[in-house]
Length: 342
Image 1 (cartoon, rainbow, N blue to C red):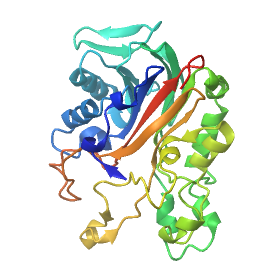
Image 2 (image 1 turned 135 degrees about the vertical axis):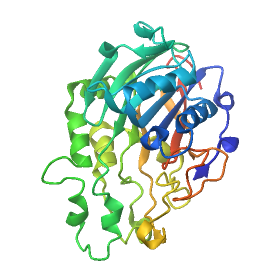
Image 3 (image 1 turned 180 degrees about the vertical axis):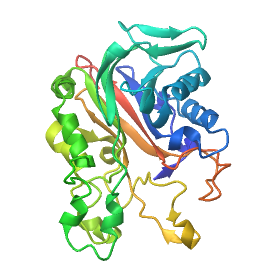
Image 4 (image 1 turned 45 degrees about the vertical axis):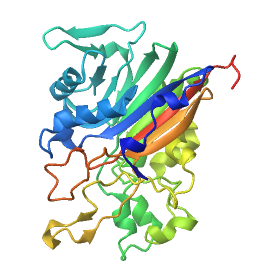
């Protein structure tokens, strides 16, 4: 479902006297806004319009660029990038003041950076933070991922010369063991992630990001006519569901992929192939996710987002107001305390 902010209800509509709310945004920034004019300010603009509590960002590029974004967003924002190098691919930003956490305050830029020791753990595809929500005193184990983009599965599935499911799955689990399925297996083996799964009854676990892979929930018998006549158990989402018990918040709210496909790829690549004057249809799919595990949190709304302005397709994209080639995903959660009635 393509939605703009005019149709995305304000958080207050979901407040109840016995609960509180949490808005999560996953946002692939397309090389951090480099493909559109004034892209960094446009990224900040859309984050401010959505008003998320926590945003998972992909394609951030550098720590310095992320610091500039925090500066534009303003003093209430804090966050950090991938901890392994100064070149960053993913980042997490939040408006919440982290209780019990210390900040590295960059006084020259007047921004708050989350201290590296507060990072739970990291892999080559992402990292996690324990975020303390000030108003509710809840702790969120929050993880941002960006899985491998190569060997994109829908290309194989829509290739008429592909005749075996094994050919498609080779892109998810190649012999080099660096496919998207392998990356999720690596995450599932992390002791810190296993602990987050075990503690999810107390501290909600949320995993967001660009998986560069469809969902196993979307490639089923009744939808295979849309996907090259294939039913595919895409491992990235399947493993997080089957091995860790995570729930796809968008598909929980919108259970029918025929009625609400939730396409996130792509805003500007709906036709590809510059050699053919962008006349080759692109296999569009839902590849960005907000997954969670918690008995205390209930998703009440989940939509894709691209702002309010029309989007021009490649190669006429430079002046787009929305700066990404992915639709963002936004999920509103309501928190119910165990000792309170609904």
